[in-house]
Image (cartoon, rainbow, N blue to C red; front, side, top):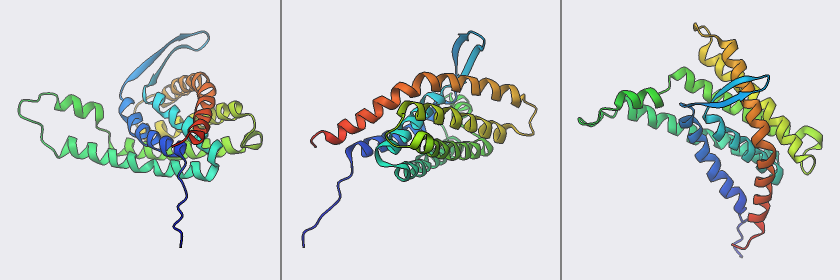
Length: 219
């Protein structure tokens, strides 16, 4: 009997590796607040830096949906929970259980930057899963789905999914606390919409073309 194995597409393999790494990196980058400068009408915009990695997650999942279908993209999103949860557990252990070296004086700064409370970790998981699944769904449904209006579908899906992501994360993280949730949410949404408009349209084209090129290239 001939042993036949189905080849795993090279583009899907590479995109999956990149996706998993970016899931972890988005959380680490999020500790820095970045300035987007002053914009006409919108004013000064600032955003947590994790959005740069997170938008690449949006782009990669959309590219996978375009190349391999909605079901495969949803599978990628679900697998993204694995590196997210593992990184949260490992950071928690390193911060709270592993004692720092006697000569190392940056433990407090390390814990402050990378240590998240259980509530914020929960908020991150919920907002990630919901917004990424919504992005894949909208991208696969708008304007007839695969092969049609690629840039438009990616742009609209990213805008709407980022709004949902921000509302969920900020609401779960800060509800009941004495913080201006509305103001924080408004500023984050505006900043993310600007970045989505700048990054997603050109990069979805790049990633889809890159995927097709990788799968045509000889091994």
